[in-house]
Image (cartoon, rainbow, N blue to C red):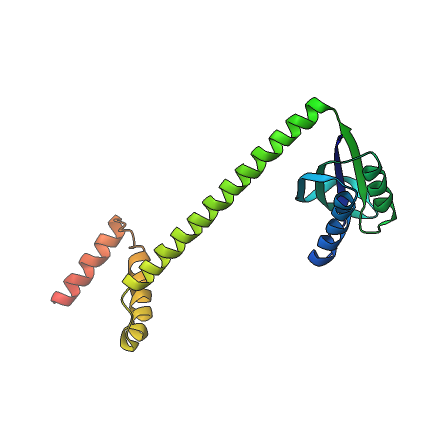
Length: 185
């Protein structure tokens, strides 16, 4: 069986449910026609090179599948009839390209699975650290919570207030000496 790759773009305004039903309907055409999927991948929302039906963005989906020659024809016909697809492209891959694409698809899937596992592990570690920090922190009493903000504010103002610079001028020293002399009399 030949290998085909179909890439299509759906509008970004579709709800998740509408998008999922559109993709599942198109995928059913492949499976009902006797084809087998290697990749059914939602590539995500991307900026278009130019506006299509007044949309600047679109949601890309990629099918990589083995099927008879009638399946991609029917798939393209249904895509043209669908209002939920902005653009599509189907190509028949040569044997060498098909093999390389399938190998790459398997590697990409493994890499994504590893990244998702790593992200889940990091999230669990972060949640555990947050729980430990919350458990280790002393619970403030009512009295401490009432005075703590006032104390922190007073400390912040005293620490951050710059000290006035001492300027020594002969006139200032003479004025101080004269005042001291008057007080002494």
